[in-house]
Length: 258
Image 1 (tube, rainbow, N blue to C red):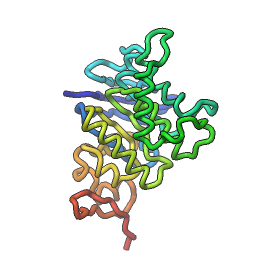
Image 2: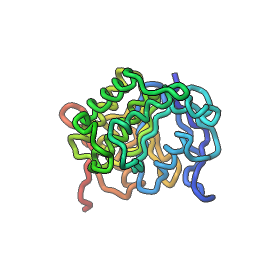
Image 3: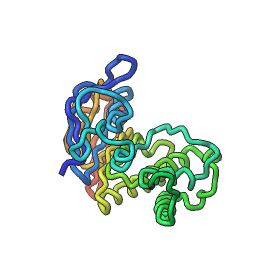
């Protein structure tokens, strides 16, 4: 079953096209990592998937065009976490995460005990329970990033669109974040589409990788098929080796040019 499908998508800003003719199918319950050098169009493509940026071509979720969905329907199907979210400084972490429950509330309805339970679970999973009463303006960069994801998790959307979810996180919290996202995917059937700068994380967590270069699809497929020394040299201008760790995971490591 297909959760998300793009057909000939083009998008950009101020009359300048950034993404050109992107087509991709994302099966339900899978994880697609969008990678590419700076300026390749990764965030632009993700915003277009979320219906936040107009474009041409078609974006369909559960075989329905995203523009045809009501705001509440779209919020129940697509959860979007930007890389640099603007957070209302006066809200607490709990209050902000509760905003994710809005698509599930009736008109003028208030959050129920069940909604609070969903939020509490999201905060606990993201190691934020101890910060539940803290104002957003007092959080560190990594804590703010986890608060953004807590709101998206509380939304309980069937497709998560995550723009650099590990930005600002140390290695331990980055791994914990990705493990949580992967557990949601495996246990709840959540579909994940994320942009990732860290190619090793992309190789180890994603089922498929989409490599963007200059706004076009340079390669798409399994991580081992896309993340090759030749592709990294061509599209990143990088000299790198693709290693296999003792447990079989792929590791992308830079090496000094000779």
